Image (tube, rainbow, N blue to C red; front, side):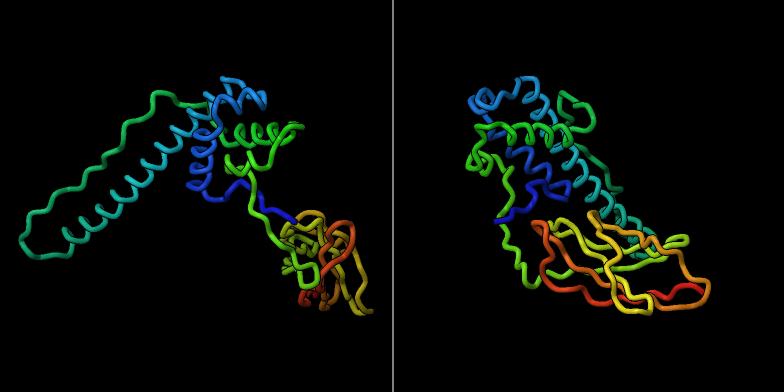
Length: 226
């Protein structure tokens, strides 16, 4: 069964994950998986510093809200009321400021742990580094293609959604033919744009485990040339 990537997209969720890992990846596990005390000290410092940054961010947001209300009151409220100018108060900073790029170091550390022959997925779940299991319906998966003219070429965008890639098909007046395979998220049609106006049509189909699966995407049309 496929799994989602363990690393979240939001900054706050990333901080929560790192704090969980630092709390639960105790000395016994560090010894078991060959993680040095220097690495663990670095991760602990990053977790504390990023948590402080998130608290500062929240304090700034609250200050911004209070300041907006204060400005509105002073500018538009004619009632004689005494108002206090908001003050921004930040929490005390941690003793250690880590080197930039801590999340990159964290992901490298996690990859090293997972590459260890003795790695246990159950351990990984406890530390928060195992993604949730997902079910892929190989009969109904369908790309959502988009097309743009960039310079002198048509560029097709296709989200991967944990697929190996997308077959790109085009109909330029003589029926659909497969013109290429997109292993990333963007594919540039190698054909030059025509001198006269025309409509080019595109569709795509996902690949998984080395073969096409699911349904073709909805057809998209691109006005070219002219």
